[in-house]
Image (tube, rainbow, N blue to C red; front, side, top):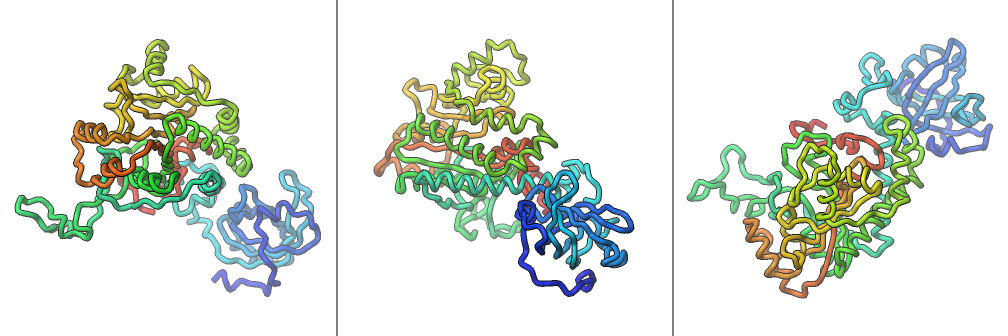
Length: 473
């Protein structure tokens, strides 16, 4: 057992590698722990690149072979996990300022060089998706998941510092916030022999909740209830769509951030969305620069400049009708036709952002037929106060609206869409008791992560992607 191959080691407090690389107390003993990225050397001296996940950078370990013996060092291959005591010294090599002259080694766990799938560099992202249990150990996914943490923290910090309350909305729900989504059903009934009523339909009154329930597609409806009591709230949690969309832009399980604010109109909502996105991007540039530089070098040469581009430009605010006119007169050949009433595709959105305005765009006042029932209707009877924030490379990154507060208008839209009002009676009732103007939006967290990392497949910005026919890890 590797755990038996141990020297009697001094008990030193562990130093994270991210911290060790900044130290200048040369000659002092330090303890680091981590996984071997590479090992090289000759019969006299060995060089190990060690990483513990705290930084994209490795620390170099220098081993005098004679001090330990080749047989003891043999299990130290790529992927092995080590506990190291050694002396911090100034590095003579390029690329790092410090290294560790190793004095004591404990091998926590070896990694069979024949079986360990990360022995070599240059694995494709497609291959790494097949070993999702190990891909966080690569430079690429270490960078992405550190950034995912920092973006999560920045989201909470932004809303906390701006007077919002974190509001927990249910994951199990009887309502469909979008009005026409494909949902995952939640049930304790026997799938092979469910109870049935007199009409032969499944009798959900005998189910755990006494009714048909599903995994939520959005926390918005419940979030509105919070805003109408607390003033300004946000949700940040998992949402689920059972659509059979096997594309680089869709997941069956993803995370959503949904602020809702009482007394906000559509203009306030746009101000919030722009300020929020710029804050997050600024936070990424201020706190994740090493990882961004790595991803820029390896995957997207324009990543850093694109992030700065969003910060440096005010967002264009454009009505849908004007946007369609620009697209129709552009002379550009699109895969999908453009006409008033069309639900714009990513190619249309990116044309407006990347070629026409060369700035992020907030598109507003969409035809009501292509938007959800809860959006406030404009006086023209044709459009609603919807807003979509469009980004370079991504297209739509935020979707939101001012919400309809008039009970009769809301009911009219519900009836037009053929929705069943029974599961959302409580939502409709809020328009009867102290209704007020309010607005909100939804930001798909993984869409944000695609933008700040430069990755092109949404499966690569979440640790364990859930997609059709894929729930192994």
